[in-house]
Image (cartoon, rainbow, N blue to C red; front, side, top):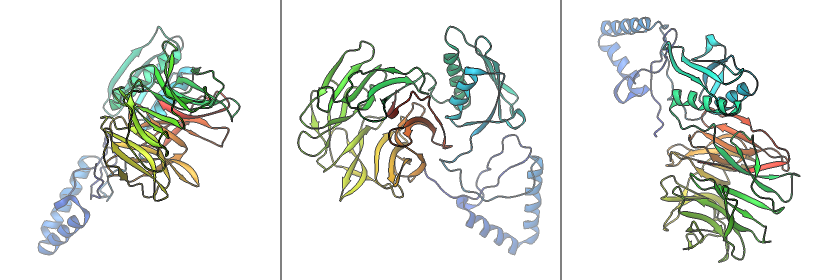
Length: 432
């Protein structure tokens, strides 16, 4: 995942798939290329001119103007969205398709400016086709029935993205979040579709609640609730409705995060004094303390289950760190340019860590998990949570007491607000 500056010849114009040719010159960098060209020009001007002539002919054969551009490799974040046209849909189906595709890095243009053509109808059921305009090839032809128009449109969006990118579907996934109906005070945990529709309450305690976390592959949550007048961590089965306390120690019990295989839970407990990272089995047994810092928070797991990333204070500065899940030495992560980091979340593909940075305002940031790409500020907001596709994030933003949820495409920085149920919604967690 190295980022490097290279000298590239770009093909633009009538070539239907413009892009960079292989790097030119020893080492593929601009100084080497220019040195070689100057050396050839001095030693044999005729060879130099002949080479330039052949290069121009090559450009002409691709139907492009004869121009050479020196560019850096495409950045990971701030990429241009994929242009598509969407024709024939209306109402709820059109709204769903536009939301789902926009937050996965697509933009909507006229058919003559599009790379892909999406055509169809939603008069009764959703039917549609996807065509690669450049390749003159139909990629999809689908008709849906047996579910609501909203579900059908989500399913079609999933297939569109899968045909173009082969990424994991998110259209029918769920999120959990905290809602305070009055904006402040006690709240409840809710679960909804990832776009905010179909919200259903999980709790009805009329108590302070915080930090819902999904059990991977199951309809079950962990969260913290003051239902017993103490911040306790509950396990809650959404299928049966049954719940139980798995951490009810004196002091703080919060920040539950479930391991990828569902067998262990990392959490923040203050039972021994300072809030630190602890790990236990899924039922609360076999409790083990991992850290001994002065103020730890927000643990999350690496997708291979080998590491736990968390926020901590070191020499009075908030930092991100990671520690082996079985215990060991703490390793600090570098977040230069993104001060006061907290609320990390590790992407399912293992490549990225999203987190919140507070530098006056709260910002959503992403960095490479191995440190090879420094933090990039994406948008204003807090509490990022990755989807299964490792490119879309749900987060909350807005003024205190009126927070709302939104879904963000990390690589294009495009985002849209979710359907809002009123009050203030925050701390979203995306089911995987």
